[in-house]
Image 1 (cartoon, rainbow, N blue to C red):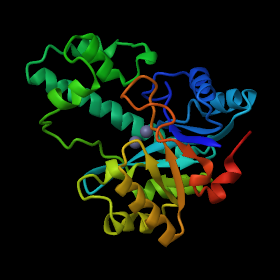
Image 2 (cartoon, protein in one colour; image 1 turned 135 degrees about the horizontal axis):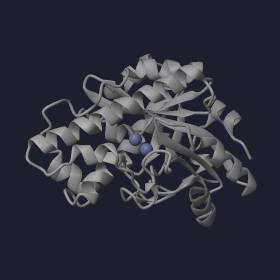
Image 3 (tube, rainbow, N blue to C red; image 1 turned 90 degrees about the vertical axis):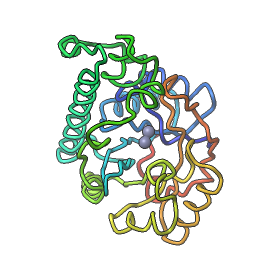
Image 4 (spheres, rainbow, N blue to C red; image 1 turned 135 degrees about the vertical axis):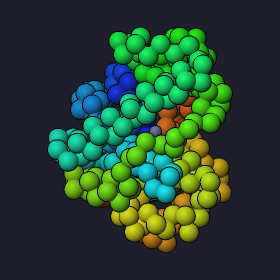
Length: 276
Ligand SMILES: [Zn+2]
Ligand SMILES: [Zn+2]
């Protein structure tokens, strides 16, 4: 089965509604998929219903933000109980941290002389089909940056505070996912561990934190990174997942790339979460 276990929707910063995501998935022949929005489960149940109608196999998921040694880490939470109160509280808290960080970024830009109207931001709303997040859309609509790349490369060059909000430690995120009956998978180590490099040494702490698997196949990974992750999973008996991190038309990651067949993966006990 062609598979993509990392797709974003309008639940976080993707462009597609659940219906549009399912339609795109179906159109390119993906048969097993998961949506994994940042720090929210809001679109999981609507997508599950639409997937069932379209005869597609689906796994519920979210992509949860964590922070360790000043580095932002994403943990994929597969198969979680969407009603679990502790998990939902953690996700709510992460979204609050993110929004506060966005407001601080806007305040910094205003202090640096950019024409950021903070009062206008308070009542600002945007069309989620554009993708991205509120502060980014506000800056684009205000003519202060042109797109997400311009934002990161030109505006966000020298923030005066740490670049990541004070998200919880990965061990706490992982424990919360497991307590919500889910399986925690380290997302795209090639991104999160970019500075230290992906290796046995840099991956090893995540074993201690309680990870169940690694997203070995990712848009962001070159062949060497993928092979390092696969070898690590084989050595430590971990699940192997993969996905595109597609955000619809936002952020330039096409759906279904890298091309993954479910036989490339090691889903193990994750298979019990697949609904058809
Ligand atoms: Zn991510
Ligand atoms: Zn993602």
